[in-house]
Image (cartoon, rainbow, N blue to C red; front, side, top):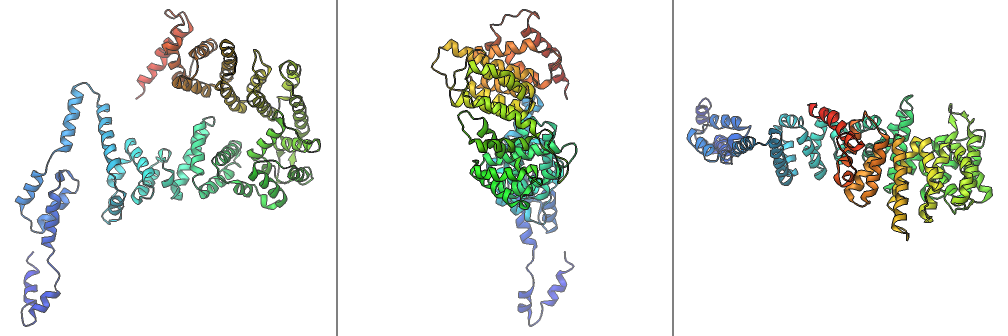
Length: 573
């Protein structure tokens, strides 16, 4: 320390000594000592990871040992050690180590959420000495990753949290990132998270929640939607996953429209509509107004019945297909005879023609599809009810070989039973049609269930209570039919929801459980057991169903689950 002191003193001696002293830098040692002592005076500073660095600075600056020891010892309150001691007491009292750890984590998470200051976090992040080592250690644990997700949603503009989200993505945890705002601001992170969401969707395409997660992610901004849809369009050219990617793209487009996002121009652009301005204008106008226009229908019919029609994907927009189905199969709707054939042609063309190349298409199924739609439409517009409808059931069953007719009949049955408040009777042919649709077309089981739920939850009619209960039993029978045709998880999830809400007569739930027990047999999947076992074990539901030992379905099912599935759970690490 004295190596530079004497030369400086010799420089400042002489006649200009005062002026030279004014130009010398101030001795930094007192300030370093003061800063270190200020840190030492904070609570439990001896537990901070920077304690050794600051002690080294303090002693190199010439600080005395005694003040440092007194401050560090005097401000030591042993918060961490007391937490460890309480944790040990809890384990001695019989609480498991994992529960104790969970309690400590939850308390710490609550404190961080209430005290987090994004400005201070950004200030620390901007420092040159900022080291992410502790962050990297934290994101290895699921609890802290969840905390960072919550903080990112609360403070979307925090730079440090954006950096943490990127670290999580780089570490391979993009599937757990839920902060859409933070993700959308970094293209590389967004790409990874979107890719992970799409991969999860491919693993379970029937899981509606995974579809919604992809949709929420892509619909955050116009840019994320355009980027995501363009990516899906490229993947849709894949020979194995192409069709399912098209379906995902369409579902996301429907989600965007339901949430009042104007994505029609993007949809048109992605389907090369700029090369067909007349078709683009006609289709765009109808989609924007969400209503069909006969003059625009004539324009589209002329183009698609020509020798060089526009791309098929242009009229395969779900919104346009739903408008066509609504117009043709909603009870009470009347279409001009001249335009009706054009409506049917466009609908049949969209669902039956297959592109074989850019300029060629396979139309082998077109005429058969047109005929099936015309026959079904003719029956549905006769204003027939149960007695007369029964005579046409065989014809409708023939037409139901075409999925588009199934979609149309679902719409027609809904308009008759819900909108026109038709009184359901025992063995109603409308429900028979729904059963046949569910049996023939797996992709239409979801709208069938949706309609059954709407009917089951509709306001009671002015009918005797017992008669109303019989009608609802018929609807439960339709749900059991869906379950028997591989639509298991959605049906069970809905029934569990009814139990939680307690808004459905318990006798109906008991009837459902009884019917399902009669048609199932092992082996069962873990997901099925997880959803169905709580219903069977619910004493309010099955308590009146007599069971002794293993002589009845209730006991047999419970015994099987306890013997196999519960044992598997205990063996899971």
